[in-house]
Length: 312
Image 1 (tube, rainbow, N blue to C red):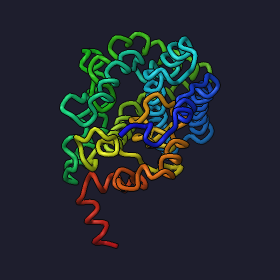
Image 2: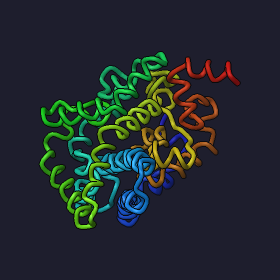
Image 3: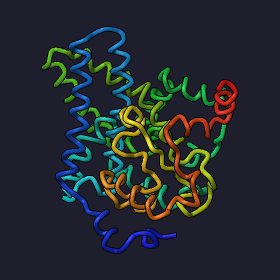
């Protein structure tokens, strides 16, 4: 199965077109949403707004990691210098990542998705899993255990599979510290330096949690794990506005489309999904698409599906 089975050469060229303007808008939109969360807490400081901010900031940090992923594919900007500079300083470094190191290992994921050579395989090969096991994983995430392991791994170069593979961030740790110092400085100049703690708390708790759910959605308990066809080793999830805000920023939920044509910029993925759907791309593969993230979780944790059915 090839993209050309469903798309003309002209359509493929159109879908793979890069745009400096769209890249700039994606970066700006991400940081405007982060600023809005900090402003919300500044104007309405109470335990509820703090908890909400930590949850939302985790989703925004995932959004920056998606832009890092995009820059690693060289598709965030058309201009290579913008892709390298802004992708690093405004997407990767704030979450202690590195576009170049990420791109190198991520290309291996694309080459070997669903096989023993896939560097991401440990994240999803054991699904479906028991509900108790899934709860333990999420508890480690929201309690900060996963995030602390991530920071420890960055210092040692070992990484952490859920948030970052081995070697993807350690080489850029000094730049990541500088980027975070700039964020702290901006908050300090705004008279709200304490809110940087929200950024740290999100990085240690909600960011690992949403990153895990993203991994499960993309490749966990897919129809046929080792098929080379992306409809067999990858999943696309149709998401509502709340899920897009927290769990799948920047259209990362259209993951089959991304594996089919990795050179397509993320802002084109929804349109590509609609075109492929109209042309019957999923007609014989309905399980390759999930309607919402709760559907994904029920597939990955069958006990939850049975419990929901029993109480319905």
